[in-house]
Length: 275
Image (cartoon, rainbow, N blue to C red; front, side):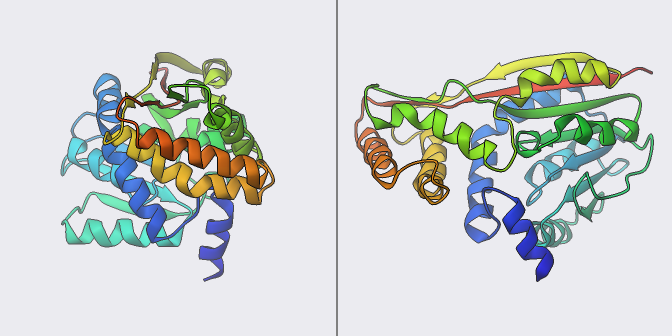
């Protein structure tokens, strides 16, 4: 129980059944983007992969399918709740090439030169010391291995028509990330960090999704903002009046058939270790 409570406190967006279901829906919405990224960097049969901050293991499962029975995936996750779900689901599905590892990059001892691919999705933006975080991962790559990161450059978030209280939402979310030491622009720093850590940049691709009421991406936004605007008020990032006004503006757009929601930029960044 103490470990579970600590993980819940450490993860800004929370740990529990509600967040698990939000992450499941998020994975479905963004799966084409993530799958395209993995296609481009290449995940060969028989590869050894590390999924960092794996959560309930939705990407881990996809990686298992790619590497096949001769490969294996290690899912590193600090939440016992999510890790238990991942391991239980792997057993149910007969996924024998998936192993869970409890902990954070900063705290665990990882084997050197063990992985062909390290995948990190929506994790580095929450990390206070991104360079130190990545410096622990690079030595675990095999020669020619790839570190693939998918995370935010937190621009682009908006609703159309504009002119309402939600226009300030991007600033609020950026402050929300910074409240735990995170960096909402972390992907902009990654190319230079890769160079310092001896990785050759092989991929840098920004993506945004957009859609109106009834679309997957707008529902994804709703599942975040309907909960976390209140959390931003609790953290005094927003006043109660401002938080209420943003939520009212959001709901009015969800009821407007001509409205559009644009996601923030999600950037695919990959670096390769020299062979």
